[in-house]
Length: 187
Image (tube, rainbow, N blue to C red):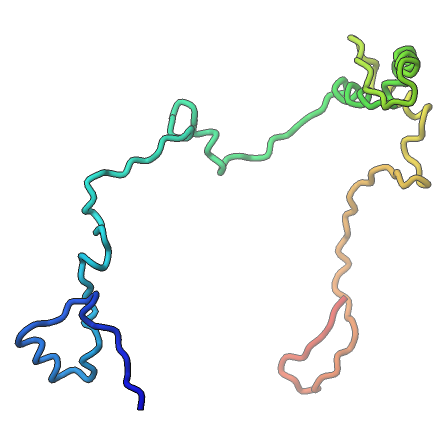
């Protein structure tokens, strides 16, 4: 029969001495079980609170209150902001594409083609006065079709709002005719 091996109960835990050791040996079922009271000098070394130096929070950019105002940290009120695009901004964005830049300034596009034939062209610098948005869109539509079903370039569609049609009975589920809660399907 193999001998039972136990951990030394006095290695990391307090053990009674004298009368209380004899009392414990007489009353406890397994005297090799530890008391459960750890020896403070061996359990956590160094002990909490025994170190002379004090903890200091490291300084970061967020530590400076002058550079970290509350409104930048307050995410509870970070509501989505509306953004608007004026017609002038939209025209400048459209004219910065290479196709529209070539439409808007054919002379500059021809000169760039002569200098480096076949190279990808950078957008031509925009003039001081931009044409109206409708004029830019009209020039683009004359040069190339904006929306083409064959090329899978379809115009954007407004979202569809489905109207409530009400619940209609669906397939019949086989069930007990006297069921307390019968299962029914609806479309």
